Image 1 (tube, rainbow, N blue to C red):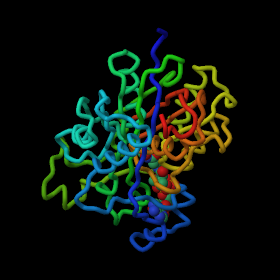
Image 2: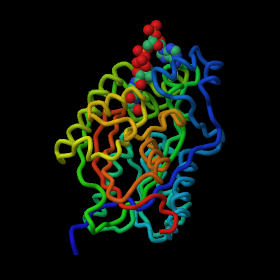
Image 3: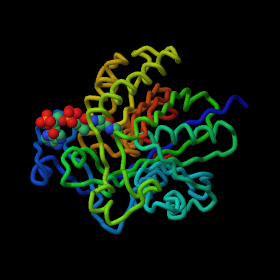
Image 4: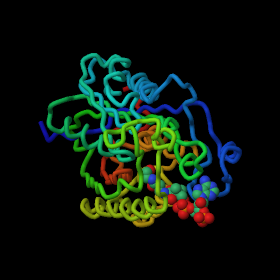
Length: 336
Ligand code: UT7
């Protein structure tokens, strides 16, 4: 038997029905559709309105969609990884609840937290378990209920984020398809620029923290933008160079959806035409852990076996990186 590579063999996704449009935001904060569209590329985002549902609801829906599309028997799943910045509870793994609810009764599970790089770093983790030969079916889910940590009176953050979830299944491949290379980075000096200050061990919840709105996302947008533009473009260029990929060789760029201008800068650096760049920020905004799998979900039909995909992400921490992956199947995998 040849070398085991880790391929994505199925995709699922879910976004809630409620659409929060730019026009609606105009009535909530001092902003305009024009400003949001030109500065970010976002037109609307989906919001999970049900107060009694958390991130696990989104994750379960995405996983169930994958399971039904691919005829996967959930009892065969070995491992469930949930990447999320908005776990159901601060303690008690969201993944354990998700695994039980989807019938992954023989799996172990854990959450990972690397902010907007959750899914990218999760791909590396999932693939490593497959490549080692240790496990055969690893379900990776990226899910976030960002609306649970947004201040809807703060125009600099509430216009950006949305709720959603995406899931992929990693399995062994013997044709050399799947994850080829990764370049993952982090720099803790960035945490001042993008954070939720309270609710952790450094600043536990108190009357004071609630009063001072310390449980909401804070972002120094301009600084994050600067780092995101240069770092995301750098890692994408680096992964191309390291794998001798020219812009002709790359079939798709799958970039984190934080801001259309960041994506455009990355594509430009890769000398990639816009038809090869997956985009859905206009429909969903920034769904944090769910941006990359939701792109796969939306573009799955267009993907062909052997396509060269370059993933790139940047997020809080700072965390960022790029992954080069060869796609393993044609179109929708409905009847696998
Ligand atoms: O996913 C994790 C990583 N996150 C990112 O990559 C996000 C990176 N940052 C960004 O995408 C952008 O910085 C933002 C979209 C957050 C902001 O865009 P910007 O072009 O960097 O705007 P800015 O912060 O420089 O603000 C420009 C002006 C300011 O007014 P003054 O000071 O020039 O009078 C803001 O107060 O725009 C104002 N502004 C707004 N105006 C209308 C900020 N937010 C809004 C708004 N509507 N929603």
